[in-house]
Length: 80
Image 1 (tube, rainbow, N blue to C red):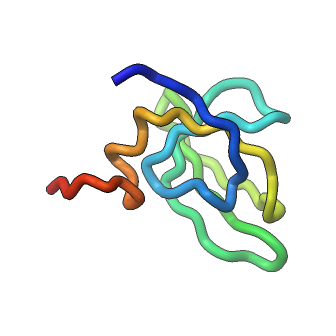
Image 2: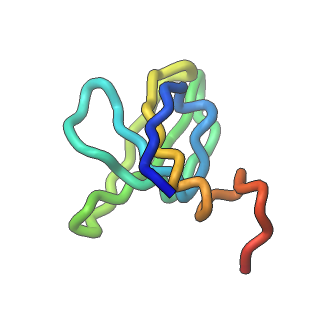
């Protein structure tokens, strides 16, 4: 599968998704996302394995790599 990006918002991201944010360089894996105040508290993993959390407002632009959907809970294909 090719790494075809799609523009979207952080609201649509799920654990396992690879996303890039407009105000940060690079791509990061979504490890965990929970509702928080008027948005989300998202835990990301960088390429070096380091994790970090960001508070993001609902509707924050996030570009997702479609190939990451296989690992996502949003995947239409059952995998275990």
